[in-house]
Image (spheres, rainbow over the protein chains, first blue to last red):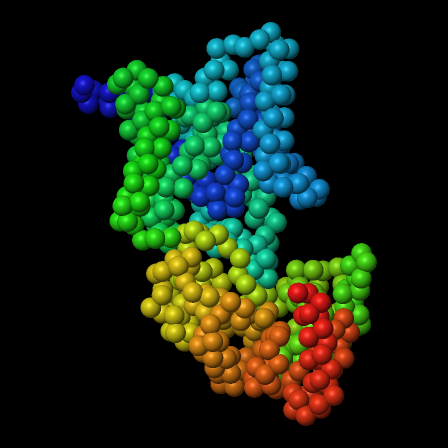
Length: 272
Length: 240
């Protein structure tokens, strides 16, 4: 083993994209987890599978169709949920299965599975191009700026919608904005961990960070640090041992969760 | 004195009942109004309408002469303390995080310190809200409601699940806010004695408004007090 791998440009792209995605997922994920929307990332990811299949069939770059399909279906399902009073978990189940179902039908039209589908299902961060990297950085930057600008409104409506409304925050618009940003984040992250493991990036670092009993900003920073650590170390380990990056990254973040639970059980963290 | 709140012919209908029927009253700036009435009398319905949470009412609600359906200005003038703040027990927010949520100018850390000191919770600044007692939490939510210097403070029966010592502290804080800082207070309560001690005006609500006036007038009228107490008792017994 040597540091030679750090000189490869594909590795630079993978690490830069990976770090950006790690930060993005951890921030958006924190709001989703606190809104009891932990599986929403998963649902959007599955609906993006329909979008990817559509792109492959139509000969369009599959991530573009995935962005369109996931954002639109996430917004529609949120609207339906509010309108018909369907519970959050049930609406997630509807979104999740409809995306996969649509994807399967479209794939069978195009003559069955191809190798491309697998890279979207399980991620392919080592193959990320320069254009992809630029897009990932631009979207990460844009979403982080929006969150910083609307930090109080987003946090307040996450904490308590009713009180946020009373203080004049346009809670419904904020909710749609979060769903919209979650849609973009999910599709952007497909390249790192694939459709099937995205919710791990949204949920695990945040569940871990919340256990440290700190305030909101510190919790967000702890979560981002764990997320970045898992991604960077996961990418390097997976390359060195020639194993899948997606699985390695997620297992590392689960290991951090396990260590945190151990520290907490040992009474080393303030109870909460 | 200006009219802080002016409610005219407020009617709220639910599918099978009229929750509020033609309620009208005025709260002058600097008043301390206690709203009393049995469970199900429409107190929460009244608050929901006043706070802009329910807009499907007939009639008008004005804060400082501005109709709340036409202007959004009232959001800056109201501080609201909910009955029992609902939140996830492990929500990663400290006391100062919660108060900061209420603050329009987020960077004004001095204001946060000032209000925490005023409410005797400054030493809790960095504690997670899930670790606090009922009385401490109540003061955190009052701090959040007050941090923007509102002209009107609206409190929805905010003493449920709070110990006696904290209730006394809470009452003295309310009295000071009203008498020293001139904040108009609208407070819904079950506790007739407390209303007698604190409020200078009383509104009795039971779908319609059956009394609104100075508290001396209410509490010197034995029939009225008895009527309220009975109505309240019956409703209570009915509930249990």
